[in-house]
Amino acid sequence: MLIYCKRMIFSLTLCAVMLVLVPKQGLCHRVDIFCWVEGDRIKCEAKFTPGGPVKSGQIVVYAQQTGKKLLTRKTDQEGKASFKIPDKAIKKQWDLKVVCNAEMGHKNFWIVKADELPSINPDSSVSKQDSSVKEGVTDKKELIQIFSQVLSKQLAPVKRDIAALKEKRISLQDVFGGLGYIFGLAGFAFYLTGKKNRN
Amino acid sequence: MHISEGVLAPSVLISGAAICIVGTAIGLKNINQDDIPKVGVLTAVFFVASLVHVPLGPSSVHLILNGLIGLVLGWAAFPGLLVALFFQSIFFQFGGLTVLGVNTVNMALPGVIAYYLCSGMVHSDNRILNIAGGFIAGAGAVAGAGILVAVSLYMSGQAFLGAAKTILLAHIPVMIIEGLVTVFVISFVKKVRPEILGPG
Image (tube, rainbow over all chains, first blue to last red; front, side, top):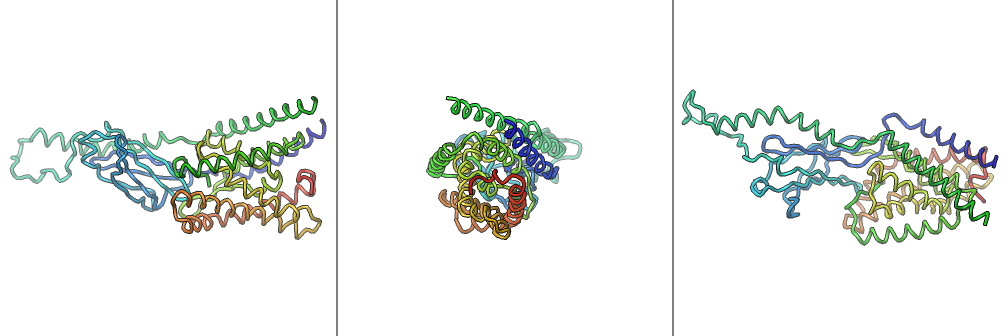
């Protein structure tokens, strides 16, 4: 019994020493991608959690309802990519599944729901310079379009932050939870083998 | 080196799971009560050590320690790594549940191979052989895991050479670090508690 205790204490010390050597920011990786709507485009950011941006990762966009592949992109050196929302998706109110394939077998996706997509496709080349509109007489449709543009510009950083918040972070609770389960299982195994010995 | 869900073909997932079950059965058969503390602790060490990340180039790589685990545990590396990977997928979303079998085989099998190749060197009285054995086990197991990941991706349709080159190049620093870590841990353990390394 005493020998087991000594061994346990030694092994735990070894474990603790290794834990101390873990750099504070050191965490492993899965790929995370999040997307948000900005005007008539969808912007995406893909990164390893944590560990930096996914450079030259492959982005594939599918229509969630039909499974049809709509377009592909590559992320830049900051892990960002963007694409114009396909008109078909707006017309048919499709949810868009944006899949990121990073290298070495890492993959993840983000769903942009149909109700996040703009219902009117704001045309950025709208007639601000349209000479047929008289001064002081503003077309209601134009007003709406101008408002949408200004709003989407203001909201873009907010949407980006909300998307980032949805990201699942690794917490200390998770680490200790896992460790607890592992040691619990070891204890259970002790019990089982002890029972076998006694029988 | 955890492969995510939905990357591999179903046939690869099934064969990986089958090999994992065989390996785990062999591992569990050989465990006796004396071994349980070291299996538990090494499982915990792997669980946490995978969180150590080295930012590198286009991505980041992490410590794997499958060489050290294989060297110390032998076939018991299979059940240990299976448990650790299971909890990593639940708590951290690393890898996934359908890919659990494949991920376990990719990491445990090189560890077991390292055990068979290097355990003789580690148990000998020659200091140089000990160091060589430890380093080869540590570095070689990481390389082995990388190759197996590339094989899994290849069998699911990706180009093997390209994937293998990317993975191995990215993990060279990890191989060196792990080789060194294995050497240090093994020499320390040999001096203080040689019975942990098991029968020669």
